[in-house]
Image (cartoon, rainbow, N blue to C red):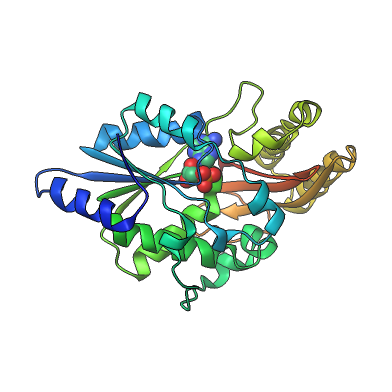
Length: 282
Ligand code: AMP
């Protein structure tokens, strides 16, 4: 695997290896790689001749300094995992390389950024918009791979690609879970063993909420049910639980009758913020 820390080196590699006859897939990550990330790498390798993985803990998408400081960084282990998976290129820049100066450009995503992650993480999607645009411009992939785990991020990137006419196909890869249902996440590394045992409540809440939705319970009733579930454990602080439209990710307040919805949840478990979602077809 080729490892680049600078944009110029990566661009040179891509110019040299890219032809009309081959295709390139990009997998953007923040590192501390787990098998969920690896599913994205595998999906890219299946569809493309060259797979580029980026590892960059992007400061502009963090709204909490302590979250940024405490974000796990395991580069040597990540490189070994990527080598094993046959990833072709790793791009792992430093902050000075990505942001020689503070960007002036600002992204606004309208309704999409006013709910859920956008509402609770001020400026988060502006940072996502900037870094994803940079990577799409630098790497110019045919396809880019994102996880359903960050469903709102996927919709934000879809909007970005549409509005700015990036010539890239987006792929959404289903969430990989631990046997007890907990969605794999780099932040799980920060859970103490006692909190790790409690963490599957996130998925349990989503599954039970899904069952209630299928029984035509109202969104209000389901929200109350989820709130109470989390009130039972003082180590959790529920941030939001929402039912969102499968096409627009717009928040649904009435009882949905037909089609796809996403049930989305975010909660603090101690100091660690966890998010998850599931898709339900009605
Ligand atoms: P991150 O490093 O957390 O920014 O994640 C990089 C990419 O991997 C994002 O597109 C995530 O949605 C995706 N991802 C994270 N966790 C999982 C998982 N458990 N299953 C599938 N994809 C994931």
